[in-house]
Picture (cartoon, rainbow, N blue to C red):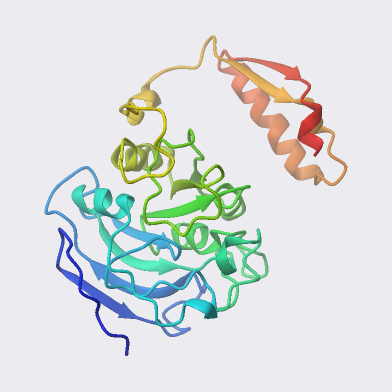
Length: 280
């Protein structure tokens, strides 16, 4: 039993939780279940949220899916945690991931890999595999992953849910176990684009504690309003080198090509561009 550190937080109704049994955690998406109750109202009122276990929640053990941090209990909330709670969300667990986020399939986790709810014989992806799996299984409404080279987008794609890697610095990173300030992106993941956009409205914006905050004021938009706009006239670049990648699987390439055709049918223009450095 881990001791509760001295903490000073806005939301004090928090239970540090427990390690769930395999029966309660069929996809191994959770490292720990907990309960931190947010504000009584807000944009995310009543929504359940899971966090990749490299984001700090005061009073709740954090592992980075590694044995190296056994016994570590943060005494501060990550900025995104504060903002989720301000918006009325309830945080219900810490989610499985690759050991210190240094792989892309979930297999390096000290707690075993998360399983893909679409087919448990397949990987849920990584390094935020627990985030993709928990959303796909309906175990949480929203999850936060963290992306450096695909770690948020890979699980979303493999588990058939939605995520976004947004502009660097838009979402504050204070409270994250950093890999590199220039590479770390905190990514909302949900079953729908609307839920992702709504979560982004909540977590984005200035934070003077954020080491990525270097550009002055960061504007935040009502991203959900973008769902009401058409895409006529938008111009998309398709990287030539990414479409002729030797190891790309045929069904993945076909899916990208189908998406390009869909964009064009909705009035967008898509042009092939060459970025030779992409291959490196």
